[in-house]
Amino acid sequence: MEKLKKNRIWLTVIGFGIVIVVILLMMLHQQKQATPEAQEASYSSSVKASSISQDAQDTDNEKAYAKKAATMKGHVFQELFTTWNKDDFRKWANSYNSLSDEDKYKASSYFGTSAKYYNLRTDKSTLSNIADSILQNDFKSISYFDTVKEFNKAYPAVDPDTIKK
Image 1 (cartoon, rainbow, N blue to C red):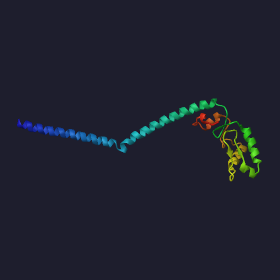
Image 2 (image 1 turned 60 degrees about the vertical axis):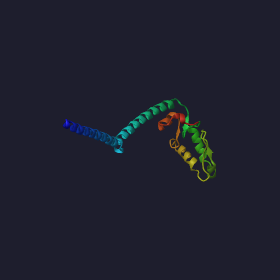
Image 3 (image 1 turned 120 degrees about the vertical axis):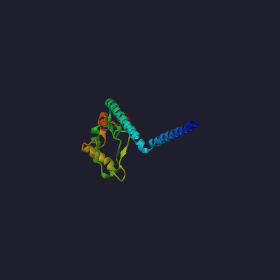
Image 4 (image 1 turned 90 degrees about the vertical axis):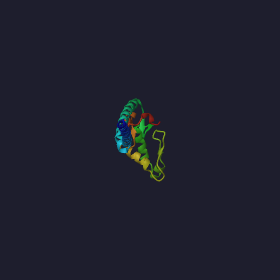
């Protein structure tokens, strides 16, 4: 009987020891998972999933913007609706180029938009660059588009509703 009691005590001590070792191993495993190296795989897969989702959303938005742009009417100049067409711009460019240098510094125009474009008193390059591009028939460099659809082709990620009037 005495041997049984001694063995029982040893078995109990060994059992508690095993339980404590298992608990310590579980805590160690949990800490290991909390390290940046262990979380890197989870983070990178999360970033990849988010990127795929964002790409799909961007594609859906671009399709919706293209449909919207196809139905909208008007000319676009630097993300503003304009009442001017290419001929109006050409007339303005010829008129601007006929100005004296002194008058060019004071020049300004709305270009059929709600925004005023003007040269600085010390720099006439703003309107001069626009006039030069127009006379070279380079309307893309001044961001002029005959239709909203053309604007959308150049900037597919821009919602046509954000074009200001």
